[in-house]
Image 1: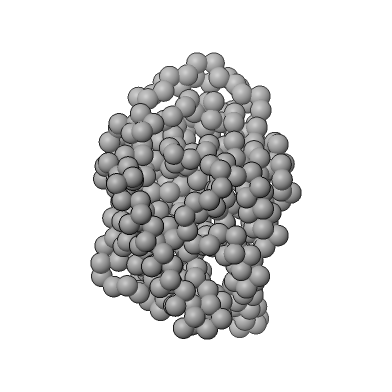
Image 2: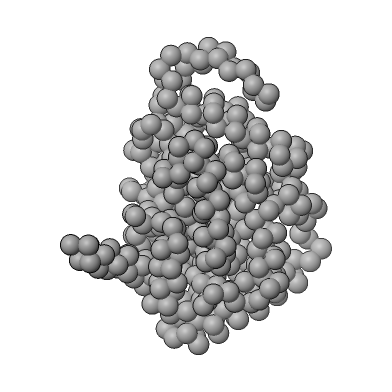
Length: 368
């Protein structure tokens, strides 16, 4: 199974433990961060979506201009624009980037953030809309004749879009969502199903669940799996755990400073992934050998918030366990973004790639 590494590019530097600095759209940071990840060997970078932040598609267009080979995984919320229009945007980005565009379909997220952009549908209705939305995207990207569509959420007549993605048959679809409704849509449409970092047992169970759902569409061998984690590295294991404690202390201080300023209305009320992380964090601080959950507990499971803590060799060994469970894509981002991106590229990604290659070579020898 081939490996893929995804980073993250935001419009300014900052994290749960690091106060945001610079302008809301920090052009120099975006450029430096993108190029650091490209140089470090990341295959793609996620451009996330949030109502308070800069637009992910426009950021991706800029990143495409300042990099040569870094893939652009653009987070996209179905329902906020016509699917035909979004299909043209992604096809255009694929041309401008010479075949580097991908879409990360985000149907969930916390309800408060969705409502700030005017989306008041409940979870099941949102996923039903997403399924129809993705059906239309696929038609726009692949149809060679005009088509009509009459559905619950969209009505389209005589659509034929001349700009088609460079990548065939279409732009790769990465899909996020932990609920049963999400799994059903992913089974039909996802090229890559994305998960937040959970213990090995739960990851194996979710992979099996998604594969079983995908089998209804003959896609159980097509769909791949991604895991999002926040590696915390140290020269020794003690140093890594000490750094994790410093990050936790800094995050607590930032939360205290932000009290009264954060808009948390309806936070997490329809986000199954966050609920899963909070439940895991309530059970213990560390799962398996080094899956650390305290930032997830502190943040209410907000986003990708669980960490692998240890030396580069230890974290690479833990990643290999996930690889053997069926994970072939890893999304890594740090709490100190530029430092961590460089450190991952130098010390972590090469180790994981080497372990996978060594394991594959050993199996070939055994089967010879």
